[in-house]
Length: 295
Image 1: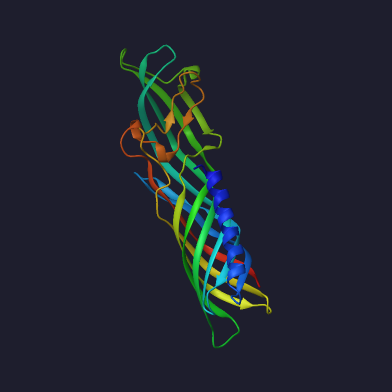
Image 2: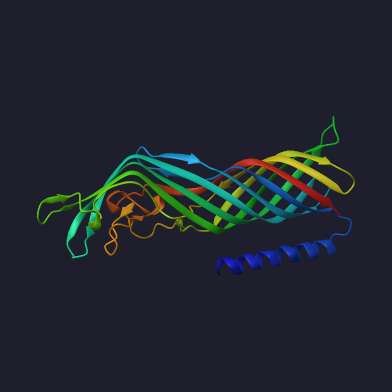
C-alpha cells in the first residue's frame, strides 16, 4: 500500500470513528480542536569522526477529535503537518574512491574541502493517537493534563542540500603513477564554494511515542484552550541501508565539472564501510497550543 492510499484510508477511518462515537456515545463529552506546535523538531542521528550535528527548528499544526470516557479520561485521534530540520558540518573533509573517466581509465578521485555542510528538510503528515488524563487544580479554574500516545508519520517532503567550502579535486592514475590537479574540464582543480540543489532524501515512514503535559483553561461552556509541552520520540530508523554506500562527493563521468553530492545517510569514506551518518530518528520537543470546541 503506497503512502497516499494509507493516508486516505486513515482519514476515512478517523471520520468513521468520529461518526460512530457521536451516535453511540450519547451523553459523552466530545471536542474538536485545531492546534499549532513547534520549536525543536529535528532528525537525530549518529555522526562519525569530528562531524557536528545541529538540531533545527520546525513548526506544525493539525486537527484533533477527542472523546471523553469520563470526566478525567479521554482518547483522541488527529492528523497534522509537521516540519523537521537538521544540519551537519564536517571540518577538514578529505576523501577518495575508485572512479572511471570518460576514456574508461580507472583512477582514484580525491576530494577535499575546508568545510562540508549538509542540511536536511523533512515534512511529515502525522497521524497521532493519544490517551489523556486531566484533573482540576484547587486554586484556579484550569486543569492539569498529561497524555501519552503513538504516532505514524508519512513523509510528504524529504530533501537535503550540500555545501562544500574550499573544494579541491584531483585524480591519481595508478597506471602512470601520476596525480592530476587539472584541467578543470576533467573535473580536477580548485572550485571555491560549491552548492548542490535541493535533492530528494530517501526516508521511510516514522513511528513515534508521544508525551504531553500542560494546562487546560475553559474559556466558556463550549470552548477550551490548552497550553502544554510535547515530546516525540522516534522508534525506528528512517533510512534503508541495504545497498552499498556511495561516495560523499562523487565523480560524474559524463559531466566531470558537475559533482554528485550524496546524502550523509547513504555515503561512507572511500565508498565503503560505515556511513558518515547513521540511525536517523525523529526527535521533537516544544510547545503545543490547542483551541477546542466542546459539543
